[in-house]
Image (cartoon, rainbow, N blue to C red; front, top):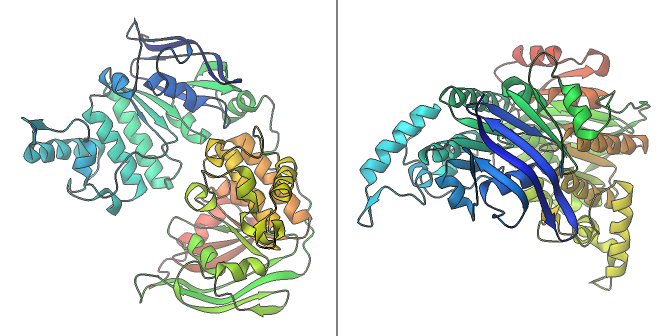
Length: 510
């Protein structure tokens, strides 16, 4: 095997914090090389060194590419060499076309004038190569996230990529989109393109990677071939430094009386007035119970959750919410919070956090009245509350004045949970609570969920990962096309049973 890329003894410091400590990694021609590790292990930092985001001289160690020492000063330098990185937050401009996005920065121009005919032709060929049948003139905002991810790859191919780095490429994709992207990576491998994959989805890593490098606490643990001896347990052991015998922490279930009930809940689309999104949904949750909601993408799970949370989604909403045996009239989010209902959004960065604010300010957001005195925030009390929740749910940060944007994904999610726990809800709706976080951080989130149930709160969990729904829940409601079509107790809940329930109930909302 010919080594194409080698990173030797890479050390990167941020003031007194050592983010990378003598890290070594090498990739060979035409392989898919996975880099795995917990949030904060140094994966993205290592790739930023490779791509020139952190320029030569800003780190210790050496990067060799095609046998030559690299001194990349910026991303343009690395891209000229054929190394292209696709970040988890896509770098597309929504209101420009697919073609404009693909060739931005290296326009097909002569004499300062863009040749749109050539741009269109080359875009068509690139889209065919990645299996995307969109019109090059289509605006990026008008295509889904899965297709946007493919456009990013087309953009990389247009730059004559030889090493393609993909940072959590399937984090926001559904199963079909993820499968398509993984298959495309395998096709690119056949063309001789080396792919470096960063992912928390270990099943995907094991499916496509030729070799796997594990990082932990900014250090290289090991690199090994993905052969018959590789499995998720080995990867997890390397990532977290211990065995996780049970992926889901044990919990003794002792549900009490029904605390939260929804009857005949119907919701229409906010923009399409005659489209019913939720159709006559009925569910209940007992004190101390964790109830899961399972379903395929588009089943209406998030729409149901948001509409229950003070009608944050939908129009012409009808039906009844009952809490503690009393009907509630919730017309806005403030009323939902005041009545002890909280909703943790699936998109923590856009809707769950103020990224440019501190941990302290984020945690107090949903319950400001508790830290205010005469309409003024008592900063001493606010800090004391934040320190308390930082300790309770183990938010790993320098201090509570650290900005949310500088935290790992798992710690950002803990801040979101801390915000809602401070509001002291009795009903907590968690929408994709572990999306984009590693297996170690997931376990800690699961422990928080168990503690909430132990305290007698009722918890509703929505997750696209069926093993997660099954592992956490005492009961599971199954949704399909806006309807609740089944209810499974824990002892009957299997992936096969959930999928069979969905397949038997096609036709949904009309």
